[in-house]
Length: 354
Image (cartoon, rainbow, N blue to C red; front, side):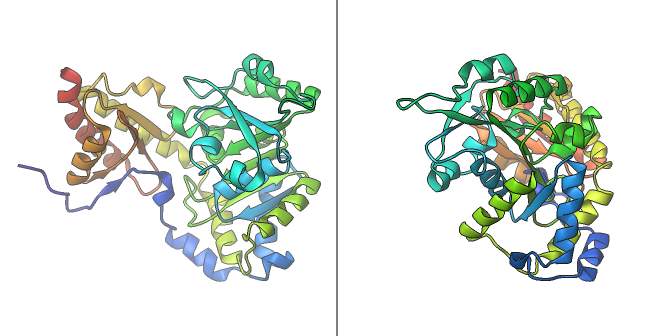
C-alpha cells in the first residue's frame, strides 16, 4: 500500500527558493518607504544597497529581481562581447541561466572540470589567455561559485580564493563571485563576508534562498562598475519602480536570518545521516557542508524516486538521471529533515542493495 502524504503536508526540499516570508518580514514590508528606483529615489532600496555593499567590502550595489540577472550584469561589466569567461563546468552561470551570457551579452565561455566544485588556481590560470591577439579569444574574467549549487553546496577554501584573486589581478583578469549562497558559506566557514567580497570585482548575493525573502538578489562592486550595471539592467528591461517593499524584506532577512542558517546546515546533516542508515551507498553525510544534500539513486531512475518521495510527502528535485537533491531551509524543521531522510533512505535502500 502506498503511504499517503502526512497530515502536516509536504516537506518541500526542492530548493531553498520555496521559502515564504515570515510574519515579521511581512510587517517590515508594509512599513517600507518607497519611491521610484529607476530614478534611484526609493529610500528602502538605496538603504539596502548601501548596507549590503558595505557588508561585502565594496562601494555600491544594485538590487535586482533575480540572481540570474545579477550574474548577467556582474559578468557583463567585466567581459566585452567576443571575450571569454572562464568558469567551472557545473557552474550555475553556464548550466542554469539558459545561455543568457551568450545570447544577451555576446560572451563566450570555457570551463574547467572539478569534482567538488572548488577552484584550483593553477588549473584556472593555465587556461587563461588575457591577450590572445587577433586570432584567438581573450580571457576577460573568471567566475567562481560559493557555495557551489551542483557540487553539494561545497564551500570554497579561502586560501585558494586569495591566491586566485591575486593572480587574476596581476594578469588583468576580472573576477566575479556567484555568491547566491555566500551567506551559507560565511556561516559554515566563519570567514567574514567582506574578507571574501574584497577578493572579487563583482559579487552576486541572493536574498530569496536561505535568507527567506520573497524576491531579490544584488550585484555588488565599485561605484563605476555598478553605474554601468544600472544602465545594463534598464537595457535588459529590468528596471523597477517602487521596489522598496521587496528591499525591506531583503533587509530584514540580512538582519535576522543569516546566523540561523546554521540550523539549516544541521538539518541537512541530520537528513543525510538518517538517509545513510538505510542507504549508505546513496549519500555520504561527511560531504554535507551547508544546506544541500545530494543522493545517488543507484540503479533506480532519479525521476522515479522523486515521484515516489512525493507520494510520501517529501518533495525533492533530480539533477540528472541518477542524482537527487534535497535543500533545507527556514520552512523545514529538524524533525522534518529527519523524516525526509527516512523516506529517501527507505526508497533508495532496495536500489543500493542490488
